[in-house]
Image (cartoon, rainbow, N blue to C red; front, side):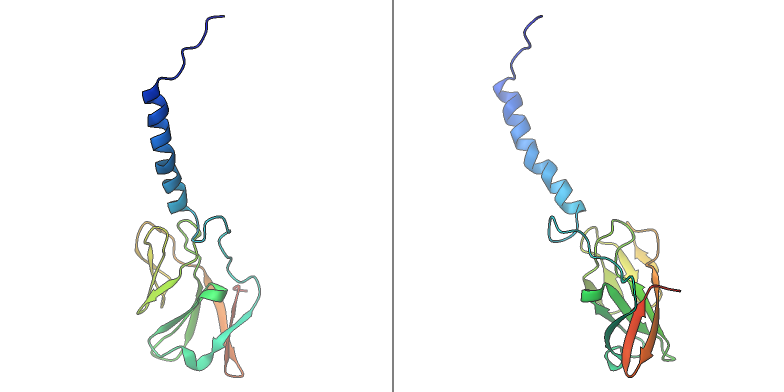
Amino acid sequence: MPARPSASRRTVLKGAAMAPVAGLGLAACSAPGGDRPAAATPTEPVDVGADSEVPEGGAKLYRDHNVVVSRAADGRLKAYSTICTHAGCPIDRLRGTTLVCPCHGSEFDALTGKVVQAPATEPLTELAVETAHGRIVAGPAV
Protein backbone atom coordinates (compact mmCIF):
# COMPACT_ATOMS: atom_id res chain seq x y z
CA MET A 1 0.00 0.00 0.00
CA PRO A 2 1.60 3.32 -1.03
CA ALA A 3 2.09 5.94 1.67
CA ARG A 4 -0.12 9.02 1.50
CA PRO A 5 1.74 12.28 1.14
CA SER A 6 1.72 14.38 4.29
CA ALA A 7 -0.04 17.73 4.25
CA SER A 8 2.15 20.66 3.38
CA ARG A 9 2.65 23.52 5.81
CA ARG A 10 0.60 25.72 3.45
CA THR A 11 -2.36 23.27 3.47
CA VAL A 12 -2.36 23.09 7.27
CA LEU A 13 -2.18 26.88 7.67
CA LYS A 14 -4.88 27.41 5.05
CA GLY A 15 -7.21 24.99 6.86
CA ALA A 16 -6.53 26.65 10.22
CA ALA A 17 -7.31 30.06 8.75
CA MET A 18 -10.62 28.89 7.26
CA ALA A 19 -11.98 27.19 10.42
CA PRO A 20 -12.89 30.44 12.23
CA VAL A 21 -14.50 31.83 9.07
CA ALA A 22 -16.68 28.73 8.72
CA GLY A 23 -17.71 29.15 12.35
CA LEU A 24 -18.88 32.69 11.64
CA GLY A 25 -21.36 31.36 9.11
CA LEU A 26 -22.82 29.00 11.67
CA ALA A 27 -23.03 31.73 14.27
CA ALA A 28 -24.84 34.05 11.87
CA CYS A 29 -27.47 31.40 11.17
CA SER A 30 -28.11 30.43 14.76
CA ALA A 31 -30.40 32.09 17.22
CA PRO A 32 -28.96 34.89 19.33
CA GLY A 33 -27.40 33.47 22.48
CA GLY A 34 -25.29 30.85 20.74
CA ASP A 35 -26.15 27.34 21.81
CA ARG A 36 -29.55 28.03 23.36
CA PRO A 37 -32.48 27.01 21.17
CA ALA A 38 -34.76 29.64 19.74
CA ALA A 39 -37.70 30.37 22.01
CA ALA A 40 -41.10 29.25 20.85
CA THR A 41 -44.43 30.81 20.03
CA PRO A 42 -46.94 30.40 22.89
CA THR A 43 -48.62 27.01 22.81
CA GLU A 44 -51.40 28.13 25.14
CA PRO A 45 -53.02 31.48 25.96
CA VAL A 46 -50.71 33.78 27.94
CA ASP A 47 -51.27 37.11 29.65
CA VAL A 48 -48.81 39.38 27.84
CA GLY A 49 -49.59 42.73 29.44
CA ALA A 50 -52.03 45.51 30.17
CA ASP A 51 -54.52 46.52 27.48
CA SER A 52 -53.40 50.13 27.91
CA GLU A 53 -49.83 49.28 26.75
CA VAL A 54 -50.78 49.04 23.06
CA PRO A 55 -51.46 52.44 21.51
CA GLU A 56 -54.07 53.00 18.80
CA GLY A 57 -52.35 52.60 15.42
CA GLY A 58 -49.27 51.18 17.14
CA ALA A 59 -47.77 47.96 18.44
CA LYS A 60 -45.99 46.54 21.47
CA LEU A 61 -43.40 43.76 21.41
CA TYR A 62 -43.57 41.24 24.25
CA ARG A 63 -40.13 39.60 23.99
CA ASP A 64 -40.68 37.26 26.96
CA HIS A 65 -43.59 35.61 25.14
CA ASN A 66 -42.43 36.03 21.49
CA VAL A 67 -45.59 37.97 20.70
CA VAL A 68 -46.32 41.35 19.15
CA VAL A 69 -49.72 42.94 19.67
CA SER A 70 -50.99 45.80 17.52
CA ARG A 71 -54.08 47.98 17.73
CA ALA A 72 -55.81 49.25 14.58
CA ALA A 73 -57.23 52.77 14.39
CA ASP A 74 -60.66 51.30 15.18
CA GLY A 75 -59.34 49.70 18.39
CA ARG A 76 -59.20 46.07 17.18
CA LEU A 77 -56.22 44.06 18.44
CA LYS A 78 -54.11 41.68 16.36
CA ALA A 79 -51.33 39.44 17.65
CA TYR A 80 -48.52 37.62 15.84
CA SER A 81 -45.74 35.26 16.79
CA THR A 82 -42.37 36.99 16.69
CA ILE A 83 -40.50 33.89 15.60
CA CYS A 84 -39.07 34.79 12.19
CA THR A 85 -40.44 32.66 9.38
CA HIS A 86 -37.07 32.68 7.60
CA ALA A 87 -34.79 30.91 10.07
CA GLY A 88 -36.75 30.65 13.32
CA CYS A 89 -34.95 33.41 15.21
CA PRO A 90 -36.85 35.30 17.90
CA ILE A 91 -37.41 38.87 16.73
CA ASP A 92 -36.21 41.30 19.39
CA ARG A 93 -36.69 44.75 17.87
CA LEU A 94 -39.73 46.85 17.06
CA ARG A 95 -39.07 50.07 15.15
CA GLY A 96 -42.37 51.98 15.00
CA THR A 97 -44.64 49.23 13.66
CA THR A 98 -41.85 47.31 11.90
CA LEU A 99 -40.38 44.18 13.46
CA VAL A 100 -36.70 43.60 12.64
CA CYS A 101 -35.13 40.13 12.90
CA PRO A 102 -31.59 40.19 14.34
CA CYS A 103 -30.38 37.14 12.42
CA HIS A 104 -30.70 38.09 8.75
CA GLY A 105 -32.55 41.43 8.71
CA SER A 106 -36.02 40.29 7.68
CA GLU A 107 -38.66 42.89 8.47
CA PHE A 108 -42.36 42.44 9.15
CA ASP A 109 -45.31 44.81 9.52
CA ALA A 110 -46.55 44.41 13.12
CA LEU A 111 -50.06 45.53 12.08
CA THR A 112 -50.52 42.83 9.41
CA GLY A 113 -47.75 40.27 9.98
CA LYS A 114 -46.68 40.66 6.34
CA VAL A 115 -43.07 40.60 5.18
CA VAL A 116 -41.77 44.05 4.25
CA GLN A 117 -38.13 43.05 3.68
CA ALA A 118 -36.57 39.72 2.68
CA PRO A 119 -35.02 37.22 3.15
CA ALA A 120 -38.25 36.02 4.83
CA THR A 121 -41.03 35.27 2.34
CA GLU A 122 -43.81 34.01 4.63
CA PRO A 123 -45.84 36.26 6.95
CA LEU A 124 -45.70 35.89 10.74
CA THR A 125 -48.08 33.40 12.34
CA GLU A 126 -51.24 35.12 13.53
CA LEU A 127 -52.33 34.39 17.09
CA ALA A 128 -55.69 34.62 18.79
CA VAL A 129 -55.92 37.71 21.01
CA GLU A 130 -58.50 39.10 23.41
CA THR A 131 -58.73 41.36 26.41
CA ALA A 132 -59.92 40.14 29.78
CA HIS A 133 -60.12 42.33 32.89
CA GLY A 134 -57.88 44.98 31.31
CA ARG A 135 -55.23 42.44 30.29
CA ILE A 136 -54.20 41.19 26.84
CA VAL A 137 -54.27 37.42 26.39
CA ALA A 138 -52.68 35.93 23.27
CA GLY A 139 -52.14 32.36 22.16
CA PRO A 140 -52.47 29.87 19.37
CA ALA A 141 -55.27 30.49 16.91
CA VAL A 142 -58.19 28.12 17.40
